[in-house]
Image (tube, rainbow, N blue to C red; front, side, top):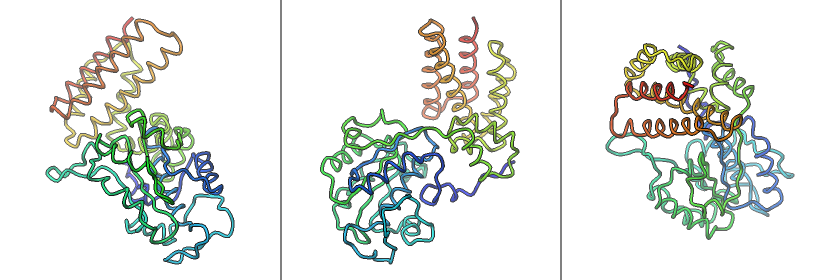
Length: 354
């Protein structure tokens, strides 16, 4: 079984390196060096491509810079002699270490908290978790020239939390920066989007994903790295989730089922459903549903481009809507995972037949 890398290596607050988003870095750096740094940046793109890693890189960089005319920072951080040419901050610097440890007085990270009863992470960021950020950002920086708030991810803010964030964006304090990581900007209030400068990140190339897998999972055979990179659609986070043996097995079986369409091997579908149902962690189901959703999305896009609006395209869209709704409901109302997978494949088989 391939060993996944130490979680700490890939946690964005701990990761000094970023691959594939040089254009976005340059845009941010150009604004900073010109003294026109917008007070809020919305960093968008698919999950797992490095948005939070970029946001932490931006935060560390800004917090390592002094305000105009300042001397060395409180903890002795070196001041740049010229305009910086990179957002990179060494892991050996005090700024990097304090952000990693959660002890930087001018930095606050906000993400979904855990439910006290279940211990599981909540589905939303609650208003209590963003309360006080306006006051925090209005305080005089204690260690340098800036105060920074990072929200990961902003599309998980519930309605009250989103309104609290909007209030801060409407009256931004001086030398304060808000970084909003967002997988789905359509879920944000339009008024939040309009008050942010947007950095839209693209998925990584397959070669970049292969290179990252080689770095973090060097024991993985090259052909499996290539397969995972293709399956991930530019998300190294997704590729790493799929790298365990159980996920690789599931992806291989599902790929064969898809390739055999319009013929649907029902016994294989039932065996796959049994395997997924036996996994009490829920990871197998999560992997299977993500792979199926990806496949349906690619099929719909391909049909739309090649054939345009057709009854067949409408049928594929209907299958995607029904399966997506079914997948979302499974945990909430405790549906039988095997039956959900079997039903979804049967719907796909029906749509694939001429």
